[in-house]
Image 1 (cartoon, rainbow, N blue to C red):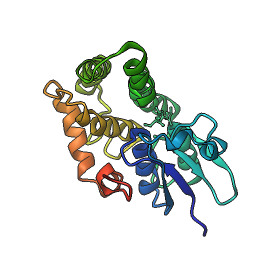
Image 2 (cartoon, rainbow, N blue to C red):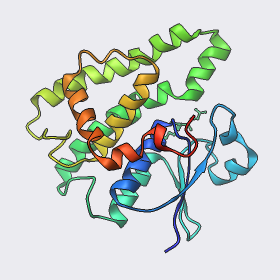
Image 3 (spheres, rainbow, N blue to C red):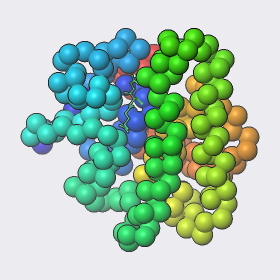
Length: 216
Ligand SMILES: N[C@@H](CCC(=O)N[C@@H](CS)C(=O)NCC(=O)O)C(=O)O
């Protein structure tokens, strides 16, 4: 079977998400690196692949291209249901999606490279203040996330039960990204525990930035 092609960048947390999903589903794929700091994702050629000029994009041998990491993960889960990365009942799926969305919709969009670059260029924000900005939006979500983990009966070895879901995929990728911005994680023992559990899982480890062909 021909492999899908993943347009991505080693450091990008949304790319990490999709790499983990592909690894969990044991889907072999070809790796197409786009260097975000060199603006390769803004090239005319890539904009024909993904008009938003963001990574990741996955292109299947049929020619179908998908973007938006969570849409890709859910598609993979529907097409390759085993092992599942979403629970089987609607209410459980909604709970897991809520955890994933807290990271993917409340933190990531305002801490994305294009936002940080906009702050740098248009408002002369320096690196120290960028770190403050980044950490503010992380803590706004991580504090309640930690609190939910401490109370929710469904929490197991992972965010929801004993197998990884899209909630762990998003949380893990965010924690990996946090390290570059030196985020203080001392208030988050449960989040750290889940991150460490993921670090015991080869599918997560294989998706880490340092294990990618374009790693610097
Ligand atoms: N919601 C999108 C976000 C995609 C996204 O913003 N990706 C980042 C990398 S993590 C990117 O391409 N950034 C380039 C930029 O900001 O210029 C997803 O989940 O796929």
